[in-house]
Length: 161
Image (tube, rainbow, N blue to C red; front, side, top):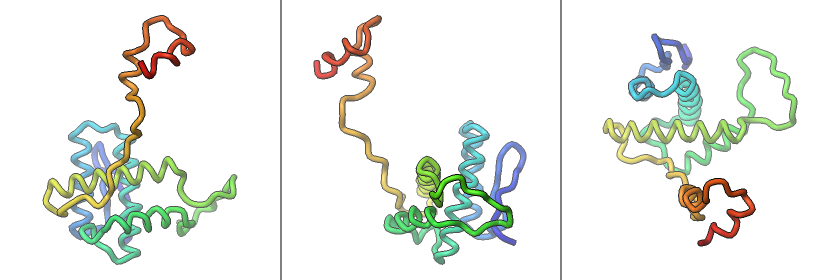
């Protein structure tokens, strides 16, 4: 039986994974439920992690074997057309693979899984690099500099003040 996402109570679990990785992912998905993540986020993360585990299985890697360079391979792998499950899919654009927003969400799910795995002691460190923040003027400082009732043209001169 292959890996699948199944509904379980008020959440989702991975079925068909009888190894430590499957147990860790299911523990992580239960953790998301305890942390009151929305049902849509929990479902999306379940499918994102299913996608990641399929990538690892195809490469013969375990969760503890993943290096940062493997994540670049994972990003490339998402751009390849995936095996069809039997349904006919008509593409409206010539673009193949996952959309950028989907890829970003999948990487966020994998990063969160590795944070959880590090706390649980299943891995030594998180191989997913932290997201870089822009080094521009902080948004909260820009909002504080605006006087109530001003228009955007008046804000332009205040950004550096």
